[in-house]
Image (cartoon, rainbow, N blue to C red):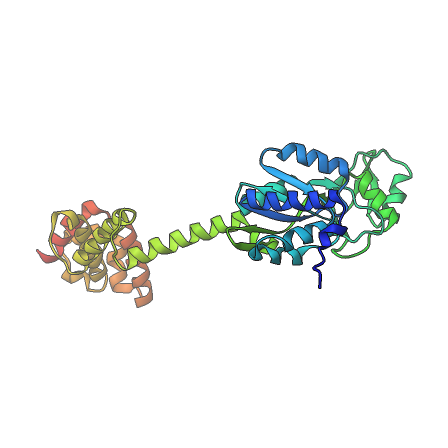
Length: 337
C-alpha cells in the first residue's frame, strides 16, 4: 500500500509555521507554553515590545503547536497536555524561573467586566473618595458598597469584601469598581509550563515565593548557628560566640566554686557581702560588733529583737538591695574579725 503523507494536505503557510516552531525549539534552551485567552492584541504587542531581546513570543493555532511538538523530541511532547483555549509559545535563553518572573512582572491591572468571576476577593477599602456629593452615594450603596457624605465628601464607611473569589460580578458592581479605579484583573501571558534541560516544569513549580524562601534561609542559618554553639562546634561564624559563652560559664563556675581569681574577686566579694548581711539579720545583735550593727542600721538592729520572722526576711531583702561593693570588705571583716 502506498504511504500517505499528511503534510501534502496541509497548506504551505501552516507547514512553514510548524517548521518555524520546531526550529525555535531546537535553537532556544527554554520553551514555554502560555495562555493568551482574553488578552487584547494591543497589550500583547506592548508586552512583545517590552521584553524583546529577552523573550520571543509566538502566537499560533493550537493545532500547529501540537503538530510541532509531536514532530519534535520525545522529551518535549508532554508539554502538549498543557494546551488549553488560546495558547502561545515563548522562547528564551533565560532559565525557567527568571522567565516566569519576567512574564509575571509584565502583567498589568485591568477592570473586571460584568458576568466575570472574581479572580480573588475584591475589597473596597474604607476612606474618602474623589466623588462630589450627589446621586453617587445611592449608586455605591446599590452596588453593595457602604457609603455616606462626610465633610462635603463621599466616604466609604467601612472596608468591605464586595465579591468573594469565584463569585460572578454584577453589572452595577463592575461599573462602580471601574469608577473607583479598582482593577481586580491582571492581564498578561499566563505561563502554563516550561521545558528546559529535559525537565518539564509547570506553573506550580515556577511560582516561588522569594520572600518566604528568604525567611526560610534566615531561620535555617539561625538554627544552624544555635546548634553549633550548643554542641560547641567551632567555625569561623561561631567561634566568637563560643568564646563568650566559655568565659561566661567559667566565670559562673569560679563564683559558685569560690575559686579565688583576680577576674572574679569583685563578684565573690559581692556574693560574700550579701550572704554575710543575710546571716547577720538572722542572729542576735549580741553576736554582732558595733561596726556591723552600725552598717545594718538602727532599724535592722531593732528588728532582731522585735520583728517577726516574716518582717526579718523583708528587712533582709531591703538590706541586700542597699549593699554596695565598697561595703563588702569591711562587712566580711566585721563578721569574721
